[in-house]
Length: 172
Image 1: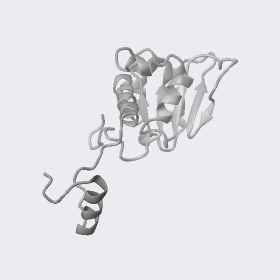
Image 2 (image 1 turned 60 degrees about the vertical axis):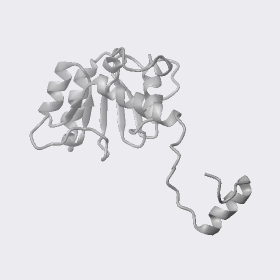
Image 3 (image 1 turned 180 degrees about the vertical axis):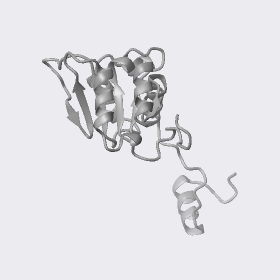
């Protein structure tokens, strides 16, 4: 990370993400089995349920676009198929062409991709950390909403609820 720049953490500000999709899809041991993804479209669907759902996210995918694909662009997520070109080169070129490369976050465990991203001034996030955030967000959204236990009621509301529940004043 460059001096003077804050690490990508709680995700307070929108930063365009460039994800080395095939690299990230090969990271194991982070996602629980219920969230396991094997295809770029599956990864995009997981991103749509995360803190990155409203951001501009580009999943750079090695190879040609499959004949059957459920998602090519939705809610700011783009699947960019590289054809015969390596994703590494495409990510480097996207950063080189960007007038705001320093605002990007590049997600990859590939050292060459990380070095290229840093060269262009972009932040770097590992695939493990990214998937960990996606898993955390998915678990949080699946769980029950946290109940507030410190709700203050006025006297009239308290009496109404006590009557409704059949409680008396001396009930602990």
